[in-house]
Image (cartoon, rainbow, N blue to C red):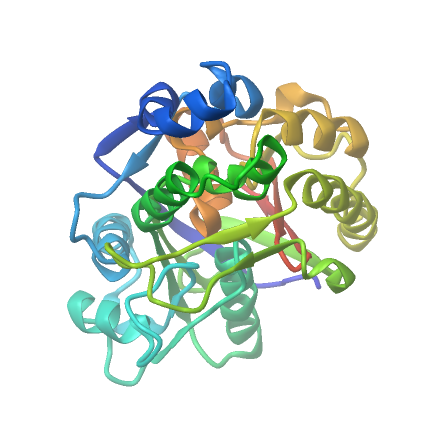
Amino acid sequence: MLYKKTMLETLAFTEAPETLSSSKMEEMLYPLYSRLKLPEGRLELMTGIKERRLWPRGTSPSDAAIAAGRKALSRTSVPVEKIKCLAMCSVCRDFLEPATATVVHQALGLPKDALVFDVSNACLGVLTGIILVAEMIESGRIEAGMLVAGESSRALIESTISLLNSDKNITRAGVKRHFSSLTIGSGSFAAIISSAETSPGAHRIIGEKSGAYTEHNSLCRGSGDAGMLDGSSIFMNTDSETLMLKGVEAAADNWENFKRELSWNDSTPDLVCTHQVGSAHRKMLFERLGIPPEKDFPSIERHGNMGSVSCPATLALAEESGLTSPGCKVALLGIGSGINCTMIGVEW
């Protein structure tokens, strides 16, 4: 899908303030490491993650999203009254009903006549939200919309550590099903998407291409919806190795379709921002897609896998680092469990 009048007007990433290093996590996993004689340093070595971030205990997904939303509003030139859509796009949410977006909408003081809803699409939530808002702008339904996401990893990490330490039947092979849960980090993100008429000097969203590889939907599944709040018992069951292989295969297929859709080639993007999973995934992905790794901007080392926040926050961090100059073409490469794949092209 190509867009004619959709702009990425504002990006905002909010970093969770508490740091949990991989070495500290291994200390917390001492009973498991001792019983299975696992070597120290294994977690960082296998993932490339030195640390991930946590919100203070008691922070809800809406709290995190509101912080990013306020940051975006402080930066935008779009009048608040023109923001006629708000989508909460994270895996984490406050409750099953109502939409967590209603909490964010009220706190940010957005218009009464805005369309307000949650988007649930695993780690692709924000990219899916971009497509939904872009198509509303292209159709003329709205002039501007806001996307927010607040991912909180504390409940999943604490539940996983407790399980791994207490279940004496877990073997080295059994640890693999829970390994990816230890890579998850916290953070929040917000973006304002607007029409070219409203924001003529903003960054142009060129287009997108998505693919559904849902024959692999069983490779990563979470437990029942409990809101991802502190104290919740949340578990993920993930075939990490197969998910990585099939995810890269899906990305390679969608990359070819994406290039045809946008009339790009392998050398077109000046900057590539991906869903940050781990160092092994990054190496395999770039080799398979034929993209020079120096075009990548990684955020995994300090933030871990922040779910739906990961890919767009990486773009926000790249912008803050001065890597997005006028005319720069950016490829957002999103892969989410399911498996779904979305790629979006942006021109700075």
